[in-house]
Image 1: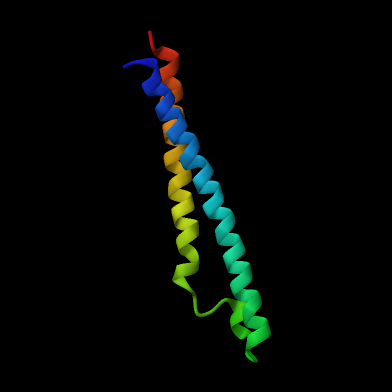
Image 2: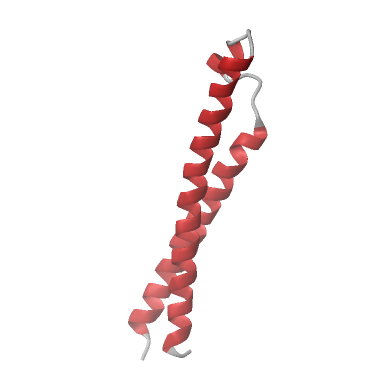
Length: 87
């Protein structure tokens, strides 16, 4: 494979790594925003304190971010190894 192919793998790995970090940070912001809005709009603060019932859509960004981080790290490792052993 030409050297440009390895660079594309490294760029894709960096993109997925960056995307994963953004998703994880977005998840923290969304959770904080959601549970803080409950305090101001509802009389029952039990949900805010115990986070029950669980909201599955709040975990979607975290799961997607974790998958994206794993894919990015694997692509960076593979691209780096291929670049080092390329003739």
